Length: 516
Image 1 (spheres, rainbow, N blue to C red):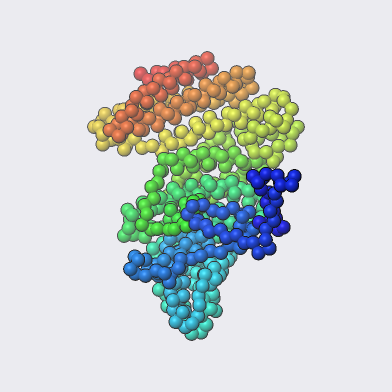
Image 2: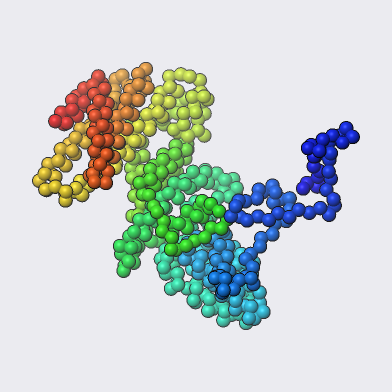
């Protein structure tokens, strides 16, 4: 299949002392038929030929076979729009109906409307959005410009009718944010990152790229919560506190299919129910946020914080994660451990382009005490972050939700005891963290640092497990094994605390006394 190509048939054996080599006839052609449902052809193979896409043969369909040519054509138009990057099922349907209407009416005037007009419409619509124009205005003006030039003056009534029936504010009111706010996908459509962005705005483009997946997950939660709120308040109009700012509250299934297309025949269906796992998505959010902040260098760390603040303002009040995560990061910056991390410029090695929380510096710098202390500080960051994340989760928990289980007096007494127990545990953790960086001697500079850090990591992990099982134990009918797991994690937590008697005897005693 290469120019002047040939094939060696080794299976034939040796002919006249040489392997058999076959050269193609000048008129040799090969035809490949491919069904995209069963896989894709490689780019290398496509480059060696001419690719022809065959639409459904509408002339072969009839009502008796159970198929309608108009329905099939409409589905193909919708598929074309989705693969062109148009988000939101409601918008895809409206554009598809308008194009199909213009095609059918244009045929009566002997004007042939094809996918070429549809492609030009999408392209012009996209360009107007990139320039910051209003979505509804961009949709209408691009529709008029493309289709009026194809249908001519005689098609003006067709253009106006479709614009009123399919592309009006009333028709698109089912998706309220489309009529009020700019249209876009997290980190992508209609403003994907380009090589030009990386050349002229390298720092901003890199930050945006590192935040794309985190933004996508946050959008999932915000969209899910928004849909729930709309169902609860179906008779009223919901508005976010920042209606003048761009919001990302799009159809969940559409977002997933556009960001992670699994097949070439992606379709959008408003009737499908999307199963959403909030707990799993929250775990993924924490993982993605931690990974994102770990990519920050000394020069762009503040830009990452600004990006997080922007996310927080965009997704309020339907996604509280970003505001909570910002609180955790700000608490960590105020901790004395940050002084060890922020003094990297005093080292003899240029670490400006290396992430603040990277341990790769061990391989780049000669081994000395300063490098060792800096590595210890970076290792200390994860358990410190987990500590503040757990406290933030506990601070948002409302014990009043359990009041309907028992009598009010009994509930108040048990809640008070448990809150006091948490306070003593928090006090113990604060004392341990203080000993690492602000005591004499400092554990971060001691030879026992790795051992003590592992002990504290066990303490905070058992703390997290205990809290998780404690919350689950409220639903004992649903999860009866949670009580046993809670008891096991509690005993492990007590043993972990007792191992710090040598450095925090008073805090350990207070914690053990609170158990009684």
